[in-house]
Length: 104
Image 1 (cartoon, helix red, strand yellow):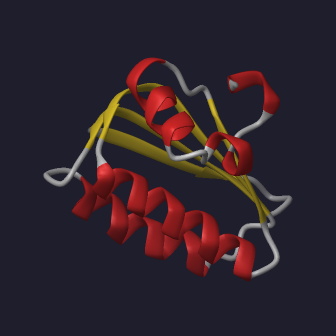
Image 2: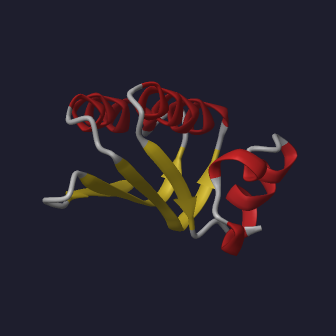
C-alpha cells in the first residue's frame, strides 16, 4: 500500500490510497491519519480509485478517520470506490454515509 496526502490553502485535504489496505499495511497509514486529523481539515477527500483490496482493519482506519474529522466539524467524502473495496462498503452500508453519489 502507498498513499499520498495533500493539503490546500483553503483548509481542504486529499488522501489517496493505492494497493492493499489491510492489517499488514494499516499501521503506517494510522500514523499519518493522526497528523492529518490534527490539521483539522474543513473538507477531506479520500480517493480510493487505485485501492485494490481492503479488509476490516482498513475499514476501521477509514471509519475512524471519518468520525474524527466529522467530530471537528469537517466534511469527508470517499471517492473512486470500485471492485472489492466497493463491495465491502456496500456490504457494510458505508456507501450510504461516506461516499459521493458517483461511486454507488
